[in-house]
Length: 157
Image (cartoon, rainbow, N blue to C red; front, side, top):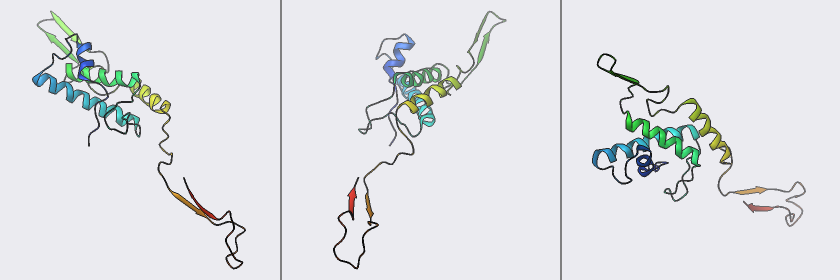
């Protein structure tokens, strides 16, 4: 099952300067796809942190991670071909994207911020997760001398 995007189309619309709810048809589909792509890239950096609650709907990402996902999606939405420089006529009009602002891919600064946010989330990728049983015999238990030592037993964590 695919995880939900870390941001919303409404957040993109606000940053695009259009009325919330005004994207429709193919534009709405493109915006949703851009958000999914950007979120997948953010999660690839933050592994194993996914910033989705156990209900698989609620986003738990900090604001800076949501902002990075939104901005990456906007870059993809505005410039799906990843064109870096465009000129029209004989120099009458020229437009150049800033370094790292032409594609959905994350900049080094964004990657560093995501890694720091994942680290601050308190999720240890090596932490044991789950329920189990540990059975340990006492060092003082002798099976041939009668009932087991009271410290011999099973504990459930």
